[in-house]
Image (cartoon, rainbow, N blue to C red; front, top):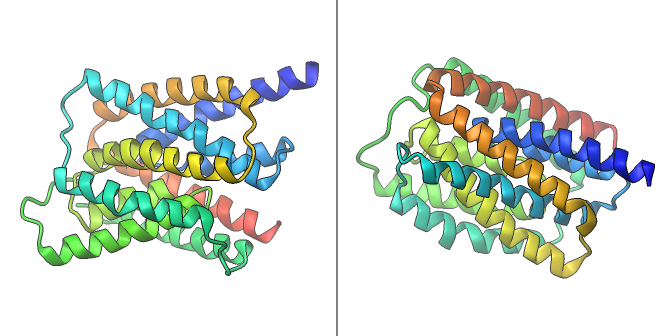
Length: 258
């Protein structure tokens, strides 16, 4: 009983902090939350399903705050693509066995994530304005990117949120705060719900740990989204870059020492 109380206390604190930063930066909760579940003794598949269910409430927490504050609008074309292209990709990623060894995939993804963080930090205009007229070429390229990211979301535990935010800014031309809100709602909530349902149908989920994780994820996301709305874009960009670089380092270390 004492061990279970300690486990759930650790889960609450770590989940709250992970989702707080994820809701400000547009992703990254899985880099901390998912490995913790494995360290606490869950098998890989069970940890993945449990993590995905909990992260859904990261998105719900962000939606709750967005419902109160209407200052960030949504791009209808992007929303449609994230549902019509992203959701099938998530299912595909959840059921297909990836042939590349997971440790190599994590190391490569880690270096890409670090490079993305450095790029966004030094690119001054990154995420500061909205692209008014989006070309067909950008839309097609964006759809392909969302499909690939959806596959990542379904098959890997981490990275989808940060890469979705990066694509929404770099390809679709959304302002950074606006891109993060799209990520919170479509990647964190809808994609993870689809992934959780798919993984849950194939394996077990640690249901007795979910209540404390849900409360922590929701409250962390609500507070984080409150900060996101109030913070200037430049500060949000710094948080995004720092979380990307740190997440990349964690991915590389996990891949090297599996």
